[in-house]
Length: 443
Image (tube, rainbow, N blue to C red; front, side):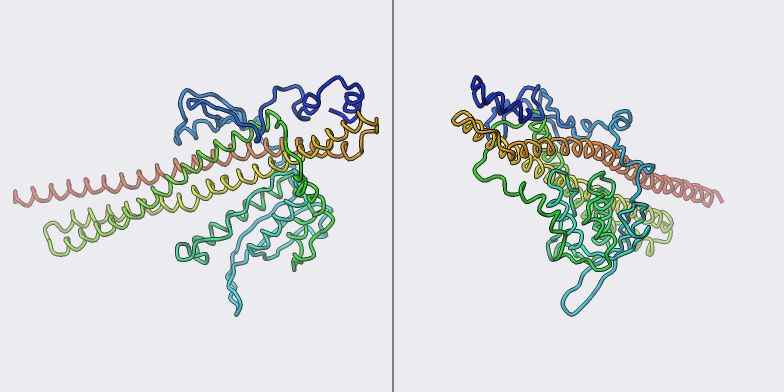
């Protein structure tokens, strides 16, 4: 609804305020209750994982049904592909690699090399190479969140780890974190708005990052959104954003379940691997004391060793590739929910100001305040940016999970093929031993 339309409705005095305060982004769609309205949902229905559109199901979806509902078909992926992800339109390329450990009297920390290649005029040089630590990436994300409040900011890997459980300086942990930081920076660099943020420019190009100084002007852009909650309460959230919230809740539940099960599988694999190694050692020691059975026993020990190596590779894939993607998207869900909350706050502010302005208009016929029109523009900007980022996120999600599940399938096939080949070689060895025994008996 435009400000002019609001003034016309206010002067007529014919419609109640609840009919005037309809959502801006879905004026012609049926409205769904917002987060402040309680909705009763049957136990036999669940919000489906259909890109934000609720779907009724005959029974609660199991964790295993998640992958069947992610819409991984090539045609859908091609239709929804982010045009900004194409290398033909990209002019900013970033890479995070080469982690290095730094030890000083005060602290020990890891830095990563951040390499940039670009043809943009906003940069003074076509190439940059700087070193950044985790807290620098964290600074960048906070600045992006403050200066671009209407956009979805990609998540960073979690900063804190449990001491005594995970060694944050271990090669495996550093490698996993480096991959996550690289993915974060690539997502920001591929975004059509975030990639032009001056904070990103400073992060990529400045040799010494002055995080205290920052860019105060852009930071102020987000302040009005950050503090709009006082006294305002959202009346009705647009149906499409209600669907987004329901989708995120369901998706979070599914990923959380899969993450917990995967953790248990990983623990069981680790315990089984320990037992398997001990099992193989027994055959090796037995072969040393049993001359006639030496070759078959050594063959069994060799098979067990091969199976150990195959299982270790399968476990490494789950811990280094599979679980990090699940956790990234769990963090992504929280980031998206945060943007939705800020959108709701912006709409609540607009509704509150509009209602107050209309009441004043009816009393003394004062003109509609400019701040109401500004609030309306802010809500429309939120809606447009959130929709665009939602589509981009859905496209990235489909591609990420297609690659993830394909990789899981390949790793499992490779694991079982190695085990099968090892045991088949043992059968050949046993058959040769049997032939040799028969020949020696005949002679």
